[in-house]
Length: 460
Ligand code: ARG
Image 1 (cartoon, rainbow, N blue to C red):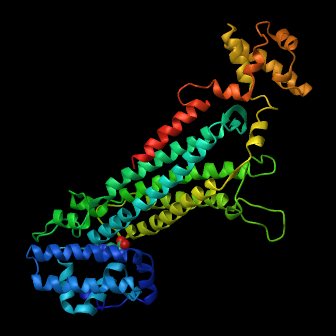
Image 2: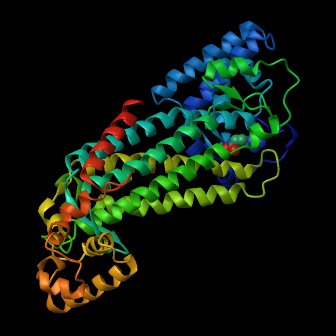
Image 3: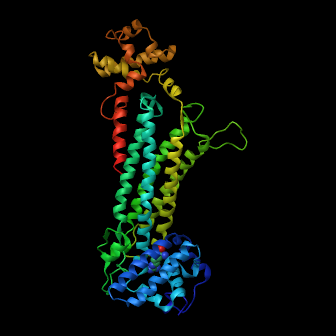
């Protein structure tokens, strides 16, 4: 027998560097509080069901409480020799209360224990993420309201397309984060299930009460198949997949803000508190935090791909491969929470150069669709109207004249249907405000959508 907690059938010890390779304590100690919480619920049930004597359950409970206090005080010392958080805690408990600690592992395996700790870890943390998303959405709605009428160029292919409002643009991200919010809320359901009681893989011969443990731990349901309970990491994959999509949204927003901060665009300026300077170039003001978030998207995608690949083709039930599940989730959680906070602060404090945005829509051809639509309403087939306006644009580019600068006779030479009323329709304001179709950029629409967004936030 070796000195491991599972050392009965072993005679030879592993080298320290081998232990080091197999150990997870360096990262799974993040689940220390959850491990104690799970053990407390388990031992309470063991005592109540008469599986172990009440006096032993009480001694173990007292010992676990001592460990909780020591954990809070930063007094617990974990060792690689004890491999992971579960064996470390059992060993520490034994030091506190002696061999009776060994009764805690009755009707339990590390396989259902680790799954329970991991579920609890995420279950405890999803609400904070949802709160941060709500805060980000609140900032977006406030700014959208303020900028419901702030006109800017809308882009396709990063080329001026049609004028929109900055408020409309911000609400596009509100919608994306709303779906992120819904995805993480749904993920809560799959995280809110208790694996404990599955034991190693097949259930247990002891008369345990899993529903009672679930209730104590605040889980709304239990896994109904013991093999699934210890093998399922869907809840973690779902979290990482949601995290990857969220980061994709933040990264697209980051990219736009970075572009808009350039000398060439100059649509917005970061607050000093959300920008950095250069060690050599005194004039620099860099959108570092947007860039860093864009960069961190890579590690979150990596976390998802990593765990998907780890889980691929794993036979049921537990395999040690699954020890690789925690680091990507821990890392992705910290990364997305930080990124969401950063974006809320960054957007809140962003200076918007409204005139510059508006001007970018007046010396371009982003009103070309307006002229084509105008002709279409006068009975010209749209395809023909498109061609007429295309030729006018080509002429305008050559002569440095915008459509609204062209004299009426010139426009009429291209299409006799054009009358003096055309000019009113060629302004960016008209272009925006005529787009009243549901979901369109008209200021009245944006105001309505702001109200809808506020209602949606009020429901939380
Ligand atoms: N440290 C392990 C993990 O994180 C705990 C479960 C170990 N179970 C086992 N049978 N080796 O997955």
